[in-house]
Length: 214
Image (tube, rainbow, N blue to C red; front, top):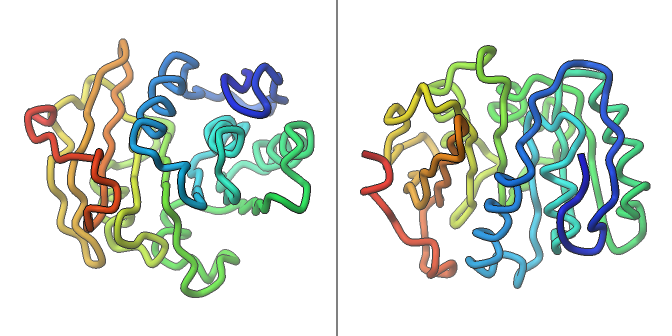
């Protein structure tokens, strides 16, 4: 695995010894091209990278302009790899801040304070790239849309297998926010869905696309 763009471009990441199914390079490139087309990095971006693995998704975001990333993975092996990759990519300096949480993702989303996230802290980007066979996507949607860490205009990305194509809704009404689908695209056997929460018009290029969720 290596960083594809930005200040850390070309750096190869340390991978944990546990089995991973990381986001493919071509998918990661497409995702960040989309984020940059939304001008997300024109603002101070705070990124929450869930099911982090080696941290490649969050580190790619920092390489392209995010100033903070919280990484969450239940595997201590993965958290160890992330702790090595942060300084390797030079994101341990005073211009950046990072946090590594070794926890269950649903626990973090439902009760972030209990795993060490300060009360009231929110994020501009959430990326959710789980091991497909080990999660229930309905639970992830419900937890994300009801989480204290999301706010108006938060972008939520969910990676899921093509076998579930059509299962994720265009609109999801949660306890805290309404998630509006803005992308739902196949990359081989991988699908990437993107949502914007309670859109205010600030990210005007992130338009609702119901036709992609049919």
